[in-house]
Image 1 (cartoon, helix red, strand yellow):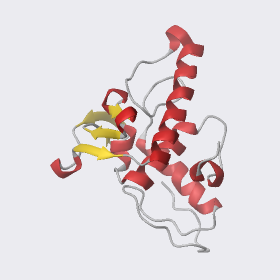
Image 2 (tube, rainbow, N blue to C red):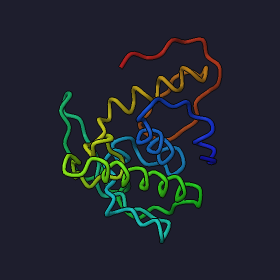
Image 3 (cartoon, rainbow, N blue to C red):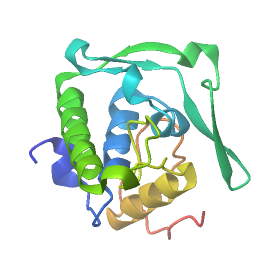
Length: 160
């Protein structure tokens, strides 16, 4: 793949959903829970927009879905051409997973899922974010919204 995100983020087998979600957070500014809860039905790639209308929330370790944290977070967001490309590729891979699994696919309706279609757990997404930041030699920062991460800090990864 040839996008900036695809070239710069170290990957593990099967982690495409988290990396695509990181791209959405970084380039669009949605919160982690909003990225995890983004519904495919609310994603309009032909119009280069998506509607932020859902999020995955944590109740201890359990998760559920709800409206975004604030009403100012809800609504249509414009996507740049590169983000549309990243999301199209992501959806193509997700569709291939669905075809491969057949009746074993969990139809959550979400844009970012585990390889079996079940929702991503926000804590797992955060954990992988901190691992990538640490591998890149950067200082960890909060992963709830997009922002800059200062380079080259000798600090160890933050335990989740």
